[in-house]
Image 1 (cartoon, rainbow, N blue to C red):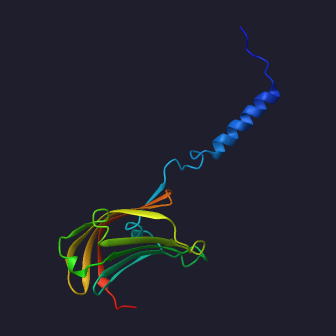
Image 2 (cartoon, rainbow, N blue to C red; image 1 turned 180 degrees about the horizontal axis):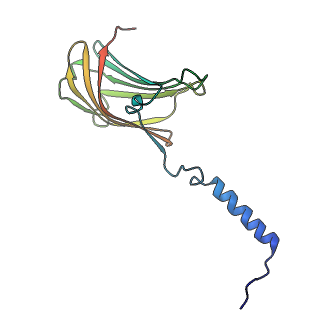
Length: 171
């Protein structure tokens, strides 16, 4: 019975080094086998997050849903998620109306931006899902979000839940 078999130490070292580089370079090493997924509307339940929901109405309706992070005890860590939805025909908005971003793309345009002190430029995104008008008055809209934003094929941002947006004066 052979308990120990001599090996070429250089070859073994080279193989171990190569395997360690492949392992470190792999997504599994960094825990990134899947894109990061963030529940944007759920963030406001956590410390240091705030939310602003507003809309403007003229011949079209523009809705802003913004979530901010700011830790008052740290410098340069703040960032913001902004979802802007524009419905080009104000008359198409009614209680119970559901807009599918794919099917209603000529009527509804969406834009997502995540800005921070480190990145002020827009990133490539695709946005899909549905937006439903739950209730409405001249001064407020209640919306049911069921949207997904995919940013640069790396991050997934989920907008799922109801929000009340209040009318703001035009800028």
